[in-house]
Image (cartoon, rainbow, N blue to C red):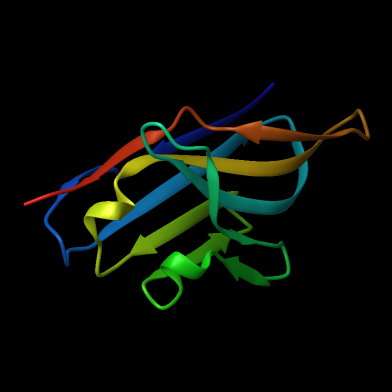
Length: 121
């Protein structure tokens, strides 16, 4: 059993900052890519940023220069530092990870339950 749990969402004013955290736990052998996606009302879920186990990162154009993704491989955690937040960043943010389950040799895609980020004055 593998679980992803996000934390750190909330309400922030435009121009403010938030830091999201996601912890992976359970029967984990290894984690390749960890990332953050978001889904705004009436829109499709979109990639915000992801990071490989080696530290290579990828960002959506809309967040480049404002958001920073990082991870702690020893703790199986991924973070998203969000600065200069805009109202259009308002969405539910989901953690995602490609995890190889211990004892099975199989790799699966896992999702967290989501955390709400609201940017409003």
